[in-house]
Length: 75
Image 1 (cartoon, helix red, strand yellow):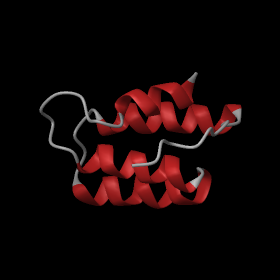
Image 2: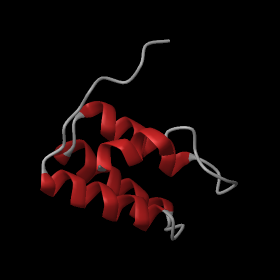
Image 3: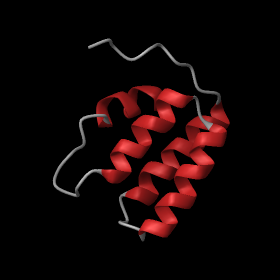
């Protein structure tokens, strides 16, 4: 399996990603998640939006596999 590419997010993208992760942690409705992911596809690079989507679709049982990569993109 290939590793995730080096992606540099601009400050606005980092802010959006941080808020999106926080919002997902509140366990919003499926409709709200779908709206968030629609915005993510428009605002974030495809690999980041995909990882966010995977996180949103993950069960609430513990950290998602992509959480470490998402946190790296936020740095």
